[in-house]
Amino acid sequence: MNFQVVNKELCVGSVRVVGVTSSSIFIIGDTETINLSSTFDTPAESFIVGPFMTLPSDETEEEEDYND
Amino acid sequence: MIESRVSVVPWFKILGVSIASVVLVGDSVKIKPKSKALAVHRQIALFDAYEGSFDYPAFKKEIGEVEKELPEEPFEMTTVQETGTINVRDVYIYALSSSAIYQVGSTRKIDAESRVMHIRQFVTNPESAVIDKNLINLENGPATNPPKKKA
Image (cartoon, rainbow over all chains, first blue to last red; front, side, top):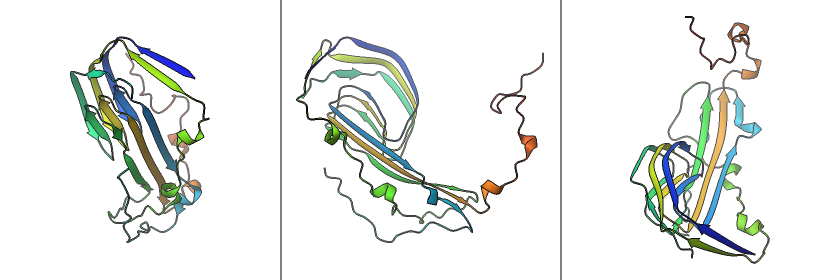
């Protein structure tokens, strides 16, 4: 497939945005690849009715690779 | 690589930037913000800063990349930039949150991820709560509409 894009003059006045959230972008420019993912999980077991308890915490700190 | 334009934004204002969000003026090659959040909603508002962990399936499950799911059709894209600039007079943003990006300029790759695990904790069962019928009045419309003043 051949896909040709011709970008002509682009002039915008005022832009007013209330919120950019959960892996969203607002870009004034050019880009090649965009990959945005967002998950919101609220399973049945996360609805807790019972005596007040703090959430379980784990001691081990996980290390993550931010290099790539 | 596609030829990129120069972005011209003489004025912008942002009120809040939080949780792995990016405000970038200028060009970049790759932006990869990643955020994990535990959203805890409690009937009794008591919180300990050191509680909780990310040991939930919501933070471990792989999110498949779109590229892998696309059919492998040969694809060629050419971009012609007739003018070298993108002009925006002014930008006003209230807030950026959870791996959000605002950029004035060009980039090659954007790869953002946000994961939220929502937990609700009650001491009394909200489902068995008695509803005060005096609080529900359908005749005056939704509660968000303020009552009209009489002249």
